[in-house]
Image (cartoon, rainbow, N blue to C red):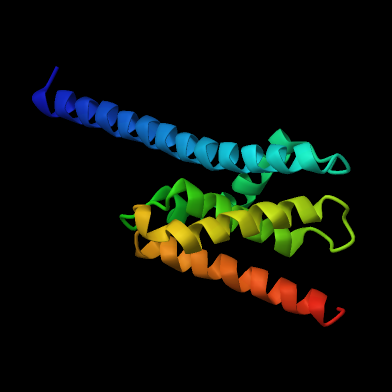
Length: 155
């Protein structure tokens, strides 16, 4: 076999390996954020038996929805990957924005979002957040602020 063909085949194998490893990182990051959301919703469910949402399905769906919205950001295409807490926070904020206000399980999602945002406010300096994390956290805070103002103003 010609050396250039061998080199090309090696390159393809390496390229394929990178894609595989990249997918493992992606799914691992999604699983970390989903698990965080699931644990928070389960904790809420213990004290609020009226909360009847499928916590596993909800956690996975919320993360998948936010990831699909901006895959380049969450996949780290620009060099930074957001922290799992940031991904979970942004996923919950997106869910708050999309779940109808009259949905009975929305309050559990709201509780989980406020819990994470409060944790970040108190202990944010202890986490290895980068500038992308802070941008996404600010977006989540804004969504919560808009939602809260809408509820307070009766709309």
